[in-house]
Image 1 (cartoon, rainbow, N blue to C red):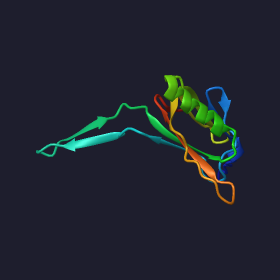
Image 2: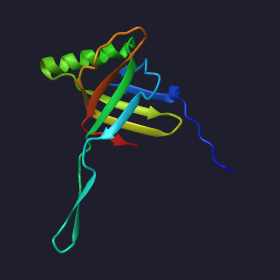
Image 3: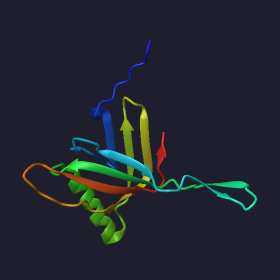
Image 4: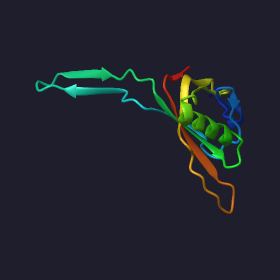
Length: 137
């Protein structure tokens, strides 16, 4: 018999410090990408191959929110604190409760404010964060 799995976006949780993120965009709303090089290699003149493994645990996180989400205010506040005195650091915990996938980082910050636009209908705002010591569990 085939195995069946279920995905439910309502079962994806995201906490930034003590703030629970709400008001996610209606399509892709969280993406996490490694910032390092992963593994690389060089080939010597005689054809010997040497690999290098990048020890970086830095990740770029993009979070897309509805323009009226209260989490926009939190992220803007953390960015403003960081610019003012470097105190805009927070932890990250992103958890897919049904898929049993989890991303955590003890140190993260907002790289720049999300772009601001208004139109006829509700739009999205995309925030970019950096996690300095990220890990998938």
